[in-house]
Length: 356
Ligand code: BGC
Image 1: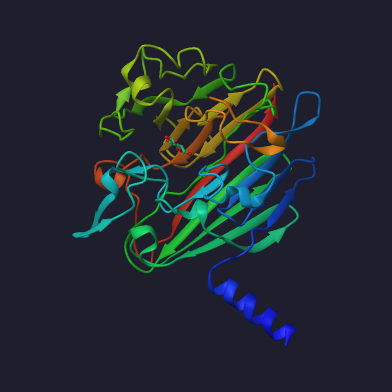
Image 2: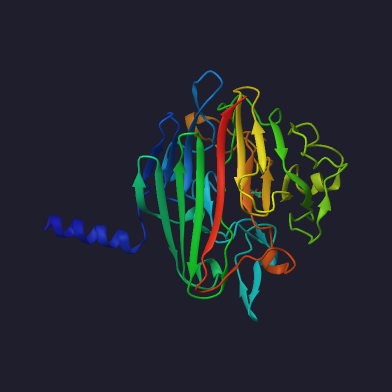
């Protein structure tokens, strides 16, 4: 009888979708380690050697996996974002003449796939080896308002030369839009309770960026960085100009913009680099995507309590989100995010760690 009740309970929980979050750890031969949960495909911790060979955890996150649930914290910490990273204007898309309304969860726009985007959904751990993990998510037709049943995967591989290689793939049974990214909040000092990221040096291989209005929506223009605080073609401290009297920095509350990469989709060329003088750790980002969102943690305000009870204060982390340009579904002149049946969406991002 008891057994039967337990079986009924397990089935009822499964029917309610109350899956439990699991943690998967992958390692390379050099001792680098990444722990990833199937909940939201989130990188929970990333252990990287500093200049003295000591391991430091360089991403924000939570000790308890359920703290990633939206009822506890509405954050994108470490997440595999889908279907559409960044913003879609008024949450509206039109594909082949049909309008679709998506959640308007950010200043009237759709941000990061909607209120319950994939960062708040379960992926399945499909394959794991010592140094790699493949997560798969089947997103039903109409998920967050997006058309088409999509099967998406994210494969994380830790190479022995300290690269965290992330490959995204997706297929669909009806035309839709896809733009996936990883939303890790990096603090390369490994001590976000002590050090913000304003002293970290940032390089962005981009001569242009896409300006935003005061709702963080891209205007459709592409502006040169030359002569503005947006110019990171020579590495400089993030804090150097972040509060400069410049309209784009007022609109973004600091850096929260998409840079138009000069890499022409070549994922062997450095797209961005971040360096912490505290730890000596340098992170180089490579991608085949045309853009990168650099978000300097401007909305962190000390209210989210993370690993080890640390309150994550203003600008204690920076996100480097490789992506299509924000709102491309409404900006046909920009690289398209439309995926059709028979096609495979792919995207590649590498986070390479070293010391200087
Ligand atoms: C956005 C920020 C937003 C953050 C949330 C970034 O990609 O550009 O505006 O606050 O994600 O996690």
